[in-house]
Picture 1 (cartoon, rainbow, N blue to C red):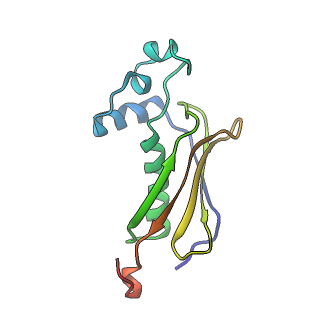
Picture 2 (cartoon, rainbow, N blue to C red):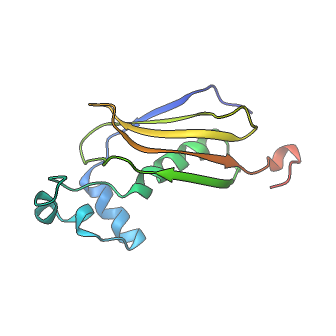
Length: 131
C-alpha cells in the first residue's frame, strides 16, 4: 500500500523528551539535558538529539509502511531543534526509485532545516519481495 505523498506531521518536542531520550540512549551530553550549561553555549538553550528527530520520522515510517524495515539511511543535522518549538516532519519519494524517500524536519517558526536526508525501505515481505 502506498500512502499519499508527501507525508507531513508536526511535533513540538519538550525538555522531558530530551531527558527521556538521554536516559534511553545514554547520550547525556549537557547540550541536550542541562539548561544552565546550554545557556552559555552558542545555542543559548538545550537542543534536541539528532537521532531523537530521526526516531520521530521512523515512527511515521512504521505507521505508513507497517512491517517494512529500512535498508539504508543517510542523515545530516544542519540546524538545532529546540524544546517547545514546533517542528514539521516530511517524507516524500526521491528519484522515482521504489522505496527511496527524502526526509526533512524543519522548524515551523523560521523554516530552518534541522534534519535532511533520505532512506530506502527494504523489500515488502507481504508482497513477497526480499527483505
